[in-house]
Length: 192
Length: 397
Image 1: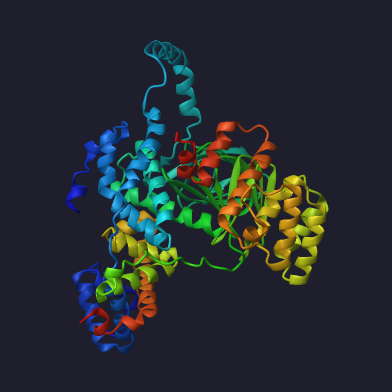
Image 2: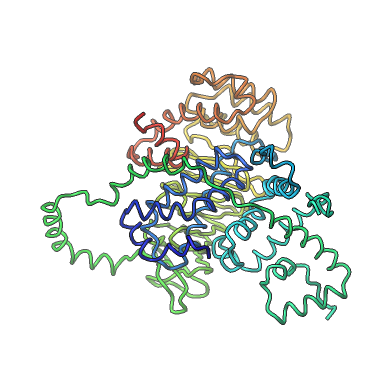
């Protein structure tokens, strides 16, 4: 758990439940980057959509936090909110597609020219794009594992499935990433 | 040692999720098995790649934009009445307490726990002898997560859906409780008919059927599933979303929608549409012959009325080429698109334009939605069209 997250204890959550704005800002500052990251990767790199989704999540959190009764870890509860919001947003956008078509993923987060010279950052860019092309059921466990650092048990709790399912989806997600980016399977691509 | 392949455990091994003994067996197998070793190399590359995924920084303007939105909800934390009013309300509450106690103990709606500690819903017999699992319900019973409730040709039952509503189960029906928790309540309707009355925030109550998922948006509706797994949704108040994978139909009060296994939800239609319109729509939705679908579409358009734009709007994204152009032209004649929405944009499925046109027409669809309070209708709007965007629009400039 990061230092910032250690600041979020029962008293902070209780203050948020009373409508304390300062406490809620602390909560926001603690989790905003992680929530925003998931929203960006879930929206195919569209930062405008991610902005909107992140705002919606924190707005929902502000009112819904009164319903949090401590039955589960706060982070599990929060990430469930995040996952549902990202899936809802994706469903909303995909409803407009004809039968059988899939969403054409937008370009991933815009590259900064100065980053292009670094092989590792090129790899990161390629991974961002490839992640955006995975189905949500494979993408979300990867984001929860690598962005949020959750254990398999925590991911299972957030996603409402078994640990075995999490393991299986991560396996398939990793395999698909490897296949899509097989050209990066050489030391030169990593600047080595 | 070589008997069982370990490909399903590769990610768990890489993430240290296996026990020491499991890890040891995994490693021994990988050394001996070329097939698993090849898969291991692939997944390992995937893990290495995923580790490069950076955490991004949220833009600074997020909090600035969020603050005014929070202010709009701050009132929800404050008492809405004066101290004097509170005292008066307390007195009334005392007078009502006896009734309240009776209500709580006679008809509790909250999710309960079985003796095994499983979350459950209360079930009331309405007619005959419904069963939960192998147990017959004489008057009241419990439906735990994972259990089936069944009625025969002479029995009916009523389920209290936690504290958010109720579901009446008709004759010859089979339902199962899949999940009940604060963030989601989910039933499975395998066959038969149920009527739901839900008074909860949108997307809290779901019903899985063999051919779609019904997501409640604050409403009352009936849902029937036949032996082939097809279903018919009829909404009596509020809105329901029918979803399967990437396909979604939004069904308002007065409208209905059919679903088919593997195809998912068809196109919603108002029940008072012309019989010919509805028959043709069924062909458009489910006939495998493309020529027949195109011909049926023409018949549909000939009979469409203004409120049938609900159906036509959904069809815009489900037909292609000249058919889409025909749908557009009919819609434009019935309900001209608002400023900024062009024929070219709609035919190219420009989402902003489609949304803008739908927003304009939805008021018409809601106008015929009698009996539903305006705040509820507005709550639906806020949810479906993006709460953030709506509140931003309303914020003082």
